[in-house]
Length: 451
Length: 188
Ligand code: SF4
Ligand code: SF4
Ligand code: SF4
Ligand code: SF4
Ligand code: SF4
Image (tube, rainbow over all chains, first blue to last red; front, side, top):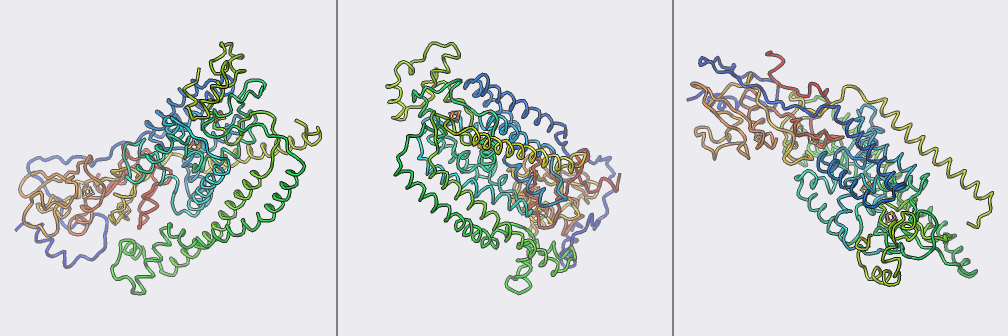
């Protein structure tokens, strides 16, 4: 009988559940045949300097995008840059590190002073925001691989009513607050875990997430960039900053002549028409509605804050110490009989159960406060967009909404002034505007008419 | 366009202050965080003294199959004939393929000399489930252990496995020495 069998027979009885480093139950053999041990596998990492290349490419791409959108005003240029960035940041760098996920890093670092946040993550988070303050969402236009992959599949955009768009967009704020809360408490990186397009970039990964990404792309055939508009947590930060941007994206290179040609050209519903004059009566009704809304706003904020705090229990279970405390409690109370791996590992550390409970309680407390804050924030945004929808803004021209415009440059070519500027011959749709508008209203793809 | 000049000015001023505050905020936050980053850059690695081979490594990694794989510390391995990391616990007397512990058949067995066998891990097949690690730890020399393989690991911001590891085994290591290998330091 070989000694392996003997040993197993003996050890099965004797060995407790502990694990120690290099338990030398058997002495390493002395080989007589001149056998050489192979080295232990340890494949090399991608050297750390490469991340600076990523940052450099990001900076260059953002600059070129700003130039293409604001100076050259070229959709083709934006499109080509977008393809490059999809290939580089998407398929080559496998969608990681990306600014959307970097939100998690930043929030984690804010909550945990010992956390070492990678330099690339900080720069990836900050650079597109700074560019948004100057040039609008040029990151979304051409650099973001997630935006690019959705942009590519868009074939037949349908318009969504403004109120529906605003309502759906609340999802992004909920997602942002949840992601920040979970990262701040050190529980998990929600955005990275449920990133819908990463399995496509990596050509592998969790099947469920892959299906999610595919679903987004199918919806994206008809609804322009659904993830960007209704879910992307980074998008809402960019949106806010872009509203303050120094250089707004303008549909026309000089003056709007209100020809309505660009009216339906934005697949993301970001073009706002001039507002009609309104009567004294309208004005009164509006004022009353606004007053009501302003009164209701604190209630909305309060209710959602309370709701957020109430979710603290289930949310805190994403933190492994809370889960562990739960398990230990149930085990000690005899409600579960099988000792689990986490409990085993916990026992091995020799920590007091009281300590663990105290830590779990502290984390749950954090969740209660954080949940209330997050809920309140969502409530504030909801109230704000309700107020925004009910105010009658005054606009004389067709304008791209400073926050919602993704700077994709699609609408530029619809403006007859654009062609005058570029010295082109007037495009077909500028000569026969009525036919064009008709075609567009029937849902023809705006891209087909691009000169 | 019809707003009176003073109102416009005030609005512009407010807008610009908010703009400046935002810029300063982004700059300040990134400056603070950059000041906190340490050199050299780090990578994730599993401390084999803490890992209990719970199986999370196979399922929580953002990659599939996981970037975590089993490695063999040859200097510790006893080259057992009936390797408890290689064979099912019940299958003591037959080394046939149906008795292999590894769900993907990632461990190969080669005869070295009587009575020793060498066990190698095929990286392409190993999914990091840790079954073999458990077996080897329980009944062998604990020479099989799990490591993050850095040719695959994309060095996630926050390693998804680290957040789920029940034994806090994930640590950050310097990028120039990104492995915590058993049986290398103490025998070298
Ligand atoms: S909204 Fe988000 S996903 Fe879309 S392009 Fe912008 S950053 Fe990327
Ligand atoms: S550039 Fe024009 S088409 Fe593109 S998102 Fe902005 S408004 Fe819409
Ligand atoms: S999750 Fe932790 S304990 Fe489980 S196998 Fe991985 S390193 Fe080991
Ligand atoms: S850092 Fe990411 S790729 Fe590497 S082991 Fe962790 S989850 Fe997997
Ligand atoms: S049993 Fe699991 S960890 Fe061990 S070699 Fe097979 S797949 Fe890898």
